Length: 398
Image (tube, rainbow, N blue to C red; front, side, top):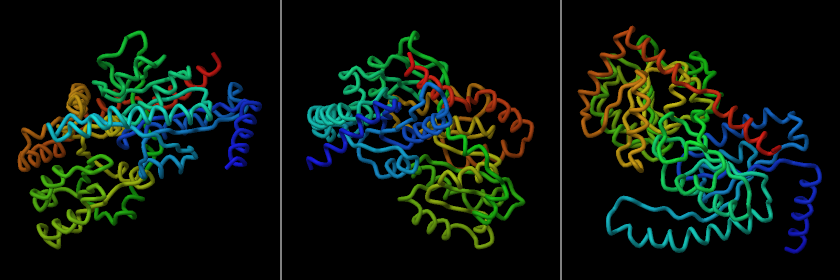
C-alpha cells in the first residue's frame, strides 16, 4: 500500500513538472449528463497542439457509480473516480421522506468528504460540471479547494444541483436563450454539446445494419438512454396501422426490448413486421447511420436529443417526460417548438390514434417538413462543444 501511494505521488509531481493540464469532469444521473462531457473531451483533444497546453491533457471524472457512464467514459480515455451522491426525490410522497433524509444528511456529506480527499491528491486545474445530483460533491469540494469551476446547464429551468453549483461557478454555459435563475453576468448561450460523430452517418450503412426494406418514410422513435415505457405502449397500439405507411426504427430501452419485440410480433402481421426494427439502444456508431436514413423523429425532450435533432435538420414530434424535474422537458420542448422546428404532444393530451393522424399529416406534407427542417438548422448550435473546449483551455492560461 505504501509503495502504491509513493508511486501515485511521483506521478502527480511529474505531471506538475511537465505542465499537464488536468480537467476534472463531473455530472451524473442520466446519459444526458455524460454524452455532453464526451463531446467536450473530444473537442479538447483536438486542441492538444495548442501552446497553452504544451504538456498535454489529462481527463478525470468524478461522480456516482454508474456502469453505463463508466463504460462510455473509459472508452474515451477518461479516468473515473467515484463519490457518493445523494438524490432529492420529488415524487412518492411520504415514502421518499426517509431516503431523502438519508441522502441529504449522510450520502451527500460523505460524498463531499470523498471528493475532497481524492481531489486533493488529483489536483485538477479546473472542473467542468455538467450538473445532475452526481455533480454536487465534486463541485463543492472543488470550491473548498479553490479550483475554478465551469458549469453547463442543458435545460431552460435548472435543476437543484445546478442551482447550487451556479453559486460556485465562475462561468455558466447554457443551452437555451431563455434560461432562468442564473445571473446574466455569468451566462453565455452556446447550445448543448453534441458528439459531432452522430452527424456524419450514411443511409446505406443503416440499410445494411438494420436490414431496412425501403419504399416508405423511415420514422425513428427515441426514448432517451433508458427508453420510454409509455411511448412504447402507445406505439404498440397503433403499430399495425403505422407500418402500412412507415418503416419504423424503435429504440425501446434495454429493459423493455424483449417484451416490446414479443408484443410487436403478436399485434403485427408477418408481412408488415419486416418494416419494424426494434433495438434496445443505438450506440453512436449505429445511431449516426440511422439518423442519416430517418425522415422524421419522435423523441422525448431531453436537451441532448433536441440539439442532436436540430443539428441534423430533422423534423420531429417531441413527447416530454411529464415527471422530469421542474417540468424541464416540457419547457425545453416548447422553447424548441416555438421556432417551428417541432410539434409538442404532451402525454396528458396524447392518444395513440391522434398521434398517428398527426404523424401522417406531417410526413405527407413536404412543404411543412421543409419548413421544420430549416427551422431546426437555424436553431442548431453544433459548435457548442468546440466553444466550451476553447474556453476551458483559455481559462487555464488566465
